[in-house]
Image (cartoon, rainbow, N blue to C red):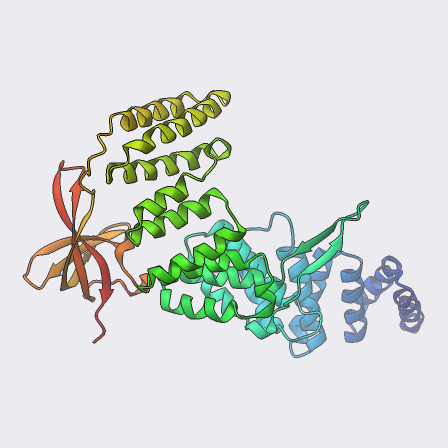
Length: 426
């Protein structure tokens, strides 16, 4: 191309660009880019590529242009968009480069810039981590902290489905982000922070009207239980159950009532579940909990109702030709028919005496360990009994705890373990 032709090519490219004929404009800007990497031409070239959905090429070009113009905000913004559309917002993103790409976007742009993919990148990344690294709650929390509440969209996205008058409502960025953060805090056992966060988020008007409110209330209830406020947790579930009567909601509610020593009320709630229309795995969980209640109280008069539920589950299982489940149901039925109605010993019997000690050993897998007591004895504990952030559990940590009688299935004998474990603040 001769130098005196650059002007004509550029003029034609601009005309195609202005009339949104991006494909033609791209051909001309590509020619200019190969011969003369003019910043203005390069900027318009990337813009046309993005508008024409040529995301891989836009990434290639913007990477070259950005290397020489790192302080140019428009180039940074388009580079971020190219990364987002080519590596983040795709059906099957590359697991090996996704987090690196997402991090690059957060360094190129901010959440406050117009047309910035920052906010959407945060949400996509949280979904990605939840899918591929579900146990890495620390990583999830780090990514929720990369954006502030006031930077998130609060209004849900509503659109009309094609060839239909039905309106579809998609949760706002705030709703999605709040649930991710609440779950991360829950999984890290940061219950005080979780309680503060849920109190704050549930006071936002958008959340008050949101379908996500129920899920946030559930997580708040967990925080209340683990911060010594079981009665408040019970009140929350009374509120939830008025709106949502799914089996798992009632099951969770029953567990809370059980912790509050309200076994009769818990059992009554469980018996309201329509087990025949409940997934088989759920039916087993419900049945096992009902069995525990029956064994620990004089409830022989309820046996027939429970057995009726089992028969219904059995019919459902027969339809699915699941012989393994059938054998389990027959075992449950036999257990229930053999119940005497006399109070049985609990598997775990807590004592009221509080002790102090030091964590001296964390076992492989980080799920259990040993505490050296004030009497120089060693007592076994499970990490799930720790009432605090999991990251706090290290060897040498001073703790207070109660003991509980349990049954060691491996040794087939009674044993003792530490429960209700709290950190001692120096």
